[in-house]
Length: 305
Image (cartoon, rainbow, N blue to C red):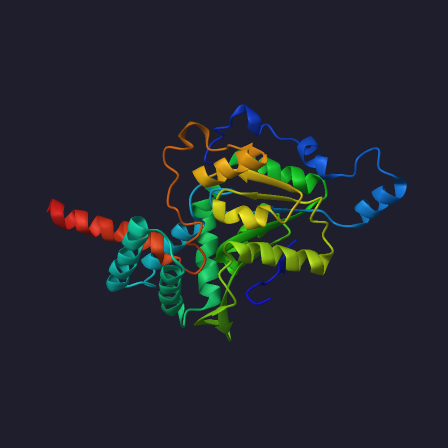
């Protein structure tokens, strides 16, 4: 399937509510039942089990793409006119909602801005962003859950709309198995401005997980998935153990309706300020969140002076 690349690799403080006290026992529910026959237990044990995690607002508070975009902007990746172009697109989104045409417009512009920049440069900037910002914004509750899956011997995969290079970087730092992310085409180490396949969003996440599972013979029925947005429903629906983490209102309602468990790791501020709604805008639309803030500061500065 186009757009899927598999990379296998080797504090916002603890505002935890009671239901976040997770242990390996919570994860072990995916193991064969004690009453299963030896053949059933052997078959289950022979197939790997995995946990699939969305990144933004599931593992990391806020949008990882925003912090990457901010760092890229500071290094001259974007110009002032790009700021106002993206601000206009975001204003349309806030007024009328998200449309496929709007996503395509923002994605195309973001891709164009990356043309000619080296993959190594972006990854190096991503490393700095992780060290300086993202590592401090990991939800302790999600970290414990991820660690519990690893302790149970499960594969752990991040599934994110952010560029796959950044997803893999985060996975490597967390000790996860690897990442599935949006793939920007590059030639001889430089971005071409084109996308390989689709942005890793919505049904694309589910498709990527299914391709990975077929390739590695992962038992999806025994596996788990975690997400925060209604856009993650296709991903959550691919496994036998879905769970909503820090869900948006639509996913919370959906989860309660069909009986999916909900984990809340945001503490007292969970519903007050959810941050940018960039889960569906992330990936190669890095600049969308950044430019709105930049444009707002510029306008306020002019009005104030």
